[in-house]
Image 1 (cartoon, rainbow, N blue to C red):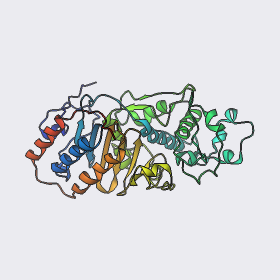
Image 2: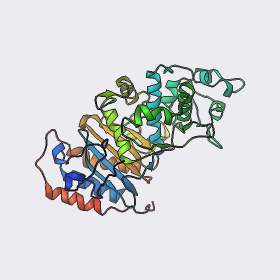
Image 3: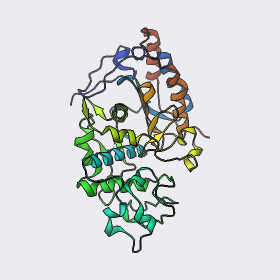
Image 4: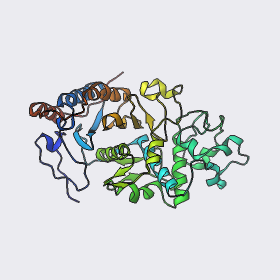
Amino acid sequence: MMNRVRSWMGVGALLGCTLLVQAQSLPRSTPEAEGIPSSAILEFVQAADKNVDTFDSFMVLRHGKVIAEGWWKPNSAEAPHILNSVSKSFTSTAVGLAIHDHKLKLDDRVMKFFPADAPPDPSANLQAMTVRDLLTMSGGHEVEPTRDGGPSVKQFLAQPVVFQPGTHFLYNTMGTYVLSSIVTKVTGQTALEYLKPRLFRPLGIESPRWDASPEGNSLGGYGLYLRTEDIAKLGQLYLQKGKWNGKQLVPRKWVEQATSKQIDNAKESHSKIGPDWIEGYGFQFWRCRHNAYRADGAGGQFIVVMPDQDTVVAITADTGNMRGELNAIWDHLLPGFGDKPLPADPAGQAKVNEAIAALVAHPHKKN
């Protein structure tokens, strides 16, 4: 594999750096060429560094091109990062592809796939639970099943299903694990193995790591490690309605379903985080303000897709201030997007250069 030389300066060749880019790396451009001033990038970087402890990396794509990128030392472009619940959006993609391959259906009952793991006397609500309900975090639990010594499908099915499935949103990582287990059941491959030829390789994502459960399934709701550019590619794929280099990798219908509001989440515990946690939930994707949507992981892992601006922002972090991360996008990047290219601004790019070169991961501030 050709080694890629990427500068800490982060805006890349566009800022005068010479890059050796892998054949399947995303194209690079300048902020001004894609209609946003370098000053907006600088404000975003400064706000991210000042207000959020701690960013690890960011990458901004406009019109399919990387216009800004940076890593807080000692993080680096080539180092995979733990994605936590951003993993869920990849599991959703695997489910969508399996449905497209006629391996299962949205309205298949969950119990159908695991008769040997069912409790002795399954409730009517458990028997009614569907794949769709798992995707929308509405399986019917009042309390999320525990993962002690697991996770396992049996643990999930043993949890009382208090509500009618499809009616009550409860963020449920174990439900995503069961989705991953269903992918294994119907394809004979883990979600990781299933996605390699269908998603990871076509996107040029090399050596993805996804930790597995004692049952041998990809963890589904967490446990995936990828680089910042890798997750940016998933965001760009979804922004392009599932198409990549002229080929439909993910069905357009699935992309539209997965990223649209499928269930209300305004009254649940996540609503306390901030306004971007009450905009509704799709199929393992969150809706955001400003007609955006995102993959979302604990500690501040984000793939934010902004269709109206033809923009993707990928972030990795280690923070409790996830609201601050999104606010940095809305307050500093969003207002800067224009419809036409801007005059070149070497001086402005140099300032961004300098700011990104100085980024160093700093410890969490005390609340």
